[in-house]
Image (cartoon, rainbow, N blue to C red; front, side, top):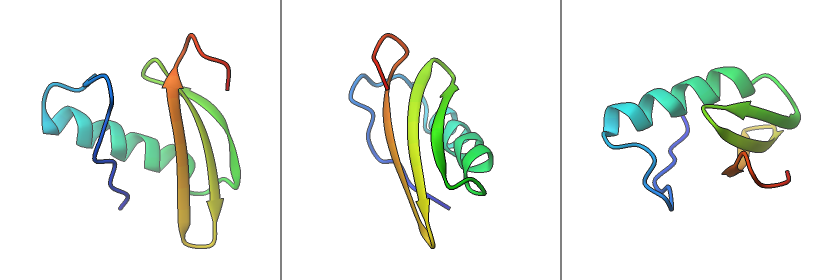
Length: 64
């Protein structure tokens, strides 16, 4: 399972909320090779290569 240890704007108040978001993100992206998705008001650009998942997250107001 992936681990995202930081959110610059502290969007998730509890650790449970953060873990639920991470689990949802992983479940939606782990089989794809890379794309742009919108999830919980985040624009997320991701790339999957063999055993590495790379995510870049920004607000929905930003360009991917």
